[in-house]
Amino acid sequence: MCFSLGWLEQFLVWVVIVCAIVAIIQLLLPYVLTFAGAAGAIIVAVLRIVLWAAVAIFLIYLCFDLISCLGGLHLPRMGG
Image (tube, rainbow, N blue to C red; front, side):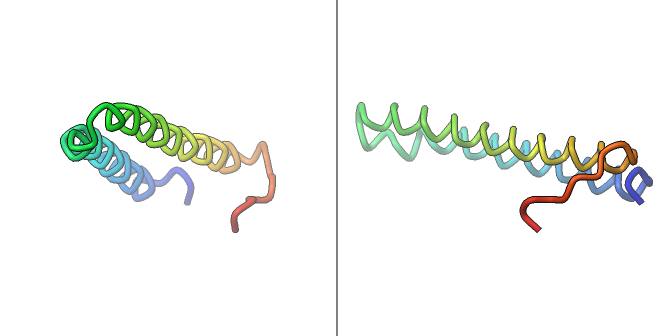
């Protein structure tokens, strides 16, 4: 079930959803935080770093799940 066409379809849909959410957040953050003045620029930078860190963590989990589908690495999942 790991590498079926249904899996690929769902994966690509999730990639598009994640990219759209990231783009919307990056578009709205500077606008919303302009009212905070100079502190708003720092907050925007921090939130962008956190956002990309979350995306990177998701990709790391995805890569290790794909490796486990190949049968070469059977490690227990930490979160459930």
